[in-house]
Length: 428
Image (cartoon, rainbow, N blue to C red):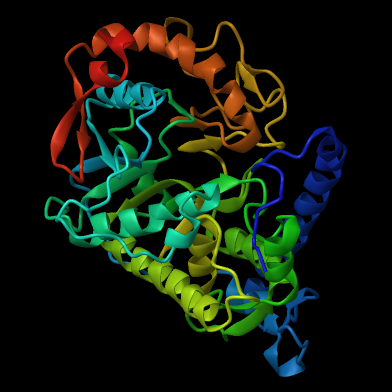
């Protein structure tokens, strides 16, 4: 059986999705009101049995998990730490010119240097070792290419000698982002999320549609013939949850562990902020989840596909290993991911119908999240919204390109500089 992705692009969905947005927002808001009411009531009254209970897949009464047992402060009791150096990291196997804006923004606004993994089709890691060949039969497949991110990030995080466990890694996708503010204080932002403790922040997306909501044979497999381990907190039972219910578990986990905001809520892997020690532990779990699926595929290749893309492995590790302090940036304080939920009025001078307005980044002024008044550090344009990147990137490039003459990015695998002007002569 072939496992060709026949689904629409990420975060697209066409006009038919807009008519559902208001209804979805109302339903989610109502659900959170009920969840918060029941959680607070349970905290005040130990005899209170919430109306809402999350059950195991077979609805066995003894496996009910009541809200009073799963709601907790939005961080684990992880150790406190003081951030050291910030490492700005991306993965870019194709030497495309869009990366110049990412490198120029980091240098100009954050006084940092972009470190690039897998640059220009690198076949070896920085230490001369090579990645596995698990995806080699599908090397030309777009989504198999996405899966490279897991191996490259994991090897870098686990083995690079320049990383101290108290350093902070700021990972972003390479080509479809507009970095509009200084990110040198992102370590303090991490501490604000975690109340001064170690932890990881992922960008938020409108749904888990990059995996469990996909159309075609691969999505059908995830929904109809697959089940995955879910443990929402360290002392909770482990459930084997069928694919159709994984997205619901994602919503529950986000509500439990993150300060819910909007418009996006589901964990996405296009943006990560973490202390090195936490990210090392988490990436080991992501690799474990991926390897287990590879083993299932090798045992039954006609019926069990390899995971497509990287995001599903991050999502399943998030749901399965609660001992790691992981949160989702639901208020887009760091990462503002464009989606069918980012309708006009959500972000100043930018929306999902037109991209950025002509006065975007005028005089270097960034756009704020209108709901909360803060300024997202990064605007991200994945999937169908990549077409809007130039409307935001071009005016930024006009301001930044003259400030990076002679500056370089860094090829992590080859350990050599990458002059920005060599990739983009216009930045001379």
